[in-house]
Image 1 (cartoon, helix red, strand yellow):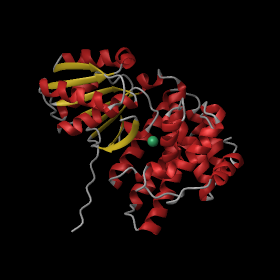
Image 2 (cartoon, rainbow, N blue to C red):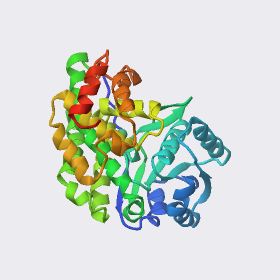
Image 3 (spheres, rainbow, N blue to C red):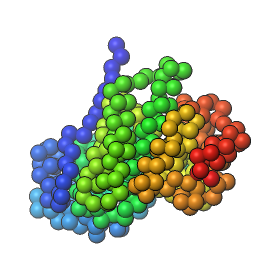
Image 4 (cartoon, rainbow, N blue to C red):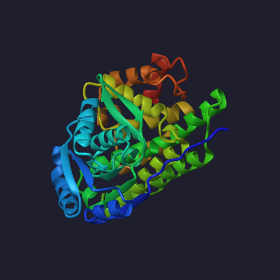
Length: 348
Ligand SMILES: [Zn+2]
């Protein structure tokens, strides 16, 4: 018998001033007495201290400042959690902090709550952790958060650039699903129509709501957060990152490795989506217009990356994750084809 396991967050809260809700959520879910709180040097001040204060009223709280999404930090977290007999973790921060908590909690076998301070990528609700190990960033399978608490007031204080990056990460779903269908047809890979539909819906919703998102107000944050959570849920339904990660993500990972100064994950994925949409024969212009409208980068110059690295990333993207079949094929594309795609789409 083939069994398909779907693990999803049990509670998703989206609203204003939710720091005080954290203890209530933990109590409802019966998470236990000892909590380890992770935040970054900045997110500590933005929301971490507030959450800590509320938690201190009813829990035994230990806290840890996380500096980078590295394996070392994951191990340090595990050590502290073991010493403190931690029952659950909570991450107050952007991608890095959430990723460290996600992997550490998975290895420890305890639940974690995601309290995002930015809406820049769909990792806030997904099961995959992006961790740097031995210099390279890899996506490691873990478990989704038991709860996501998205405080609109907190997320709104992050620079607008992060919200626009979140749009880029969601628009990726358009080409990711195309790649997934290709792998299904050519390689017989498992495909879930439900997961694909949900993933496409979040991408289409942000495209439809681009005018609201560009305002950068509370409603904009709500639109982006909802989409990112749906994206995370789509991945949980699929049991893999397939619905939200295709060749455009491989391109972004390649840039992370070769560009001297990479841009934000969602920014690179957005530009990658323009390129992959062109290769797929999709309406790449429409994607570019949406990104432009929300103020996300659409070319090398806006990413702050030299054109040479864009071409190189396109050329090597297929080697990043050989098991993930995409429009780039097994052999990748030639330098000439890469340059042509980048020129036609105005990326370089
Ligand atoms: Zn992503």
